[in-house]
Amino acid sequence: MTVRGLIIDWGGVLTTPLRDAIAEWIEADDIDHEGYRLVMREWFAQAYAGDGAVNPVHGLEDGSLPPAEFERMLAERLRTRGGMAVAAEGLLLRMFAAFEPVEEMYEALRRARAAGVRTCLLSNSWGNTYPRESFDELFDQVVISGEVGLRKPDPEIFHHALDLLDLPAPECAFIDDIEHNIRAAESLGIVGVHHADAATTVARLEELFGVSLG
Image (cartoon, rainbow, N blue to C red; front, side):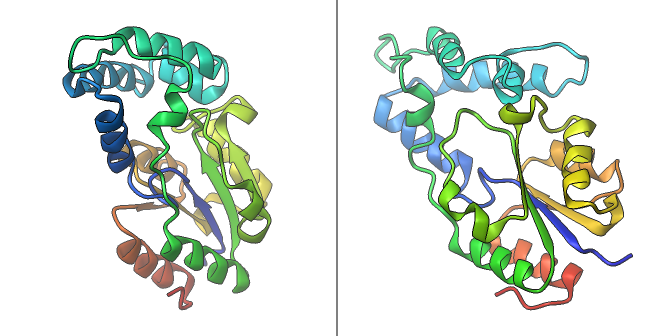
């Protein structure tokens, strides 16, 4: 079946990698890296367990937990390398301050859309500030988790994106840098593209859409 739709993540796909942004924040705020790693491992394991339990990551992403409350909860679990408390206010903004746009991915989106591919942003928001001024140029539809009360990898958010694009699952590709989300999309019949770098992802999309995107 011809692929006519593209559903794409934001952080780590249209931006530089999350690990790089986090590394810069940890250095700038003098965060104890091991402490951060442990709390994130715990919270993400719960958030992706699929057992229906709600935790801070889940709540932040689906909008049921205000970003300021997430910042407070995370700051309580963190310390600087010198054992000092971490400021909660503005924590999320500082965490993602080093995100930069990946122009190769933006250009691929523009070219895909110009070739008739329907595009949809599908992002699990962490209270992020999105470059909304570019959305009209890039996307036919936008789905941000905290605004719709749903989150990846739940099937409902993928169905919502498909409904907005008015396309069946097999006619859509989905790009994400988190493998768990890719597997969830593929289980619904969507073509998964696990993003590692722009060159590899763009080459795969060119195969799927049969157009040059570089």
